[in-house]
Image 1: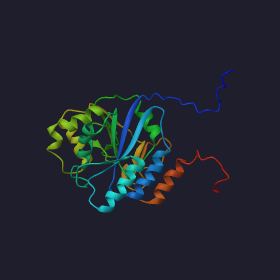
Image 2: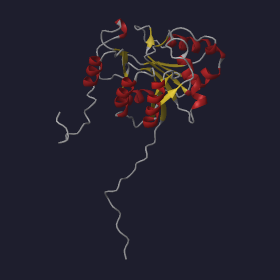
Image 3: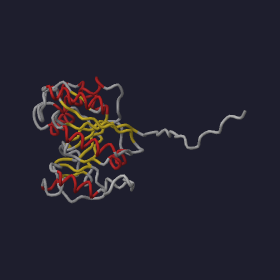
Image 4: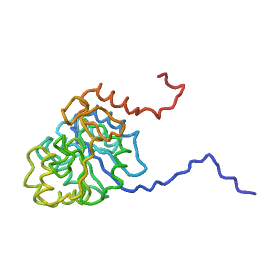
Length: 261
């Protein structure tokens, strides 16, 4: 008896060979449940063939019974939250705790680690494309401050979203320089640490592709542009709606009799 023919309709799995890996840590607060669920939708429909990109939400110690229950449910369902051993804060060491903890708590290293605010929209494919030709070591990437400068060596990268190569993450976890200087604007401090340690000789400021939402922050703001990588200061739902409509994020939605839109 002849063997049955293979079913041509069977699913064929294609293995993707990524060129590099990236962890995006979105710093947020445990109570921001609605924002996390929204951002899961935003990043869950994006990907890039160039990079393996993982998006995690970064919070400090849970202090309320409802946080322990609801965040535990999120972890069970999505497994995308990292709870750091710190007291929730903005400029008192949370960013340091984030970077310095990763080498000890992650099973696998990434080529790059990014810190992002939860009021930022990042377009993953153009982000990955911009990183592909850049060095994998000693890299500091973002939106350089002051706003009117394009020189990445002038000051520091804005806290809206900046990226470090893995070797710099390891350096932060091991060096005494960051440990002795934890209080103050976290983005400015990171730039200061790297300068004091003579680190980040490879720097890249991605302007005008990274910017603040139009009209929100003077020279750091400009109109939405097609080559956008990141838009910051999305504090209101109408701002998010404007951005998502501009980039037509639902264009992959197929017509169906199941929904009347």
